[in-house]
Image 1 (cartoon, rainbow, N blue to C red):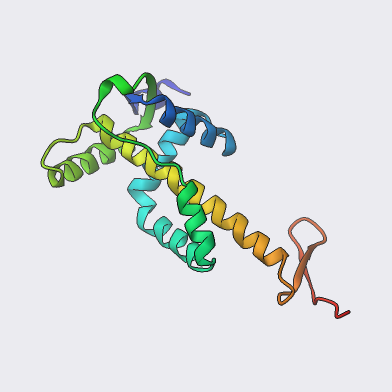
Image 2 (image 1 turned 180 degrees about the vertical axis):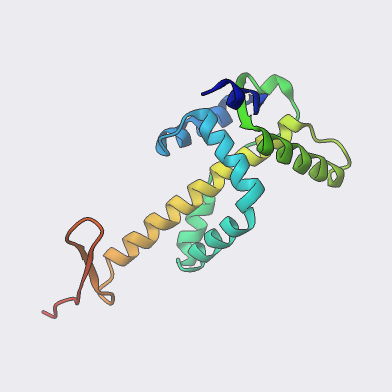
Length: 175
């Protein structure tokens, strides 16, 4: 990274509970990203794509059964996002692009105004990160459920992958 790029980054020390830190680390591993990359992605997704992502998740959930939805919701990780600093035993330096750092601070100021002014930037960032972890889990689990339903259904044609990038549809054969 060149010197001008380093200067255009915003550095924030994020304090997390061990539980939230571990969940973010696990998600980063699943996505083949660094922890900093996963945290930055969570902030960017929340700032710039939140509504679209929620629509996609809701549409995915709407295609599954009620039992599947309840199962996913029961298993969705949840985190207490209080202001208790003593629970936040993990510190994580986060390097944000300057524009993302500014947008995050503006969103925090706006969000804080609706919370009677009692929301620290750290608590806000933990809330956004927890949203991203829960969102990612729900989309992943819903995708798995849809895939399993599709593969075990006799009413849909089977898809056979032949060559990379090509798909061949085969009708189910009657016995």
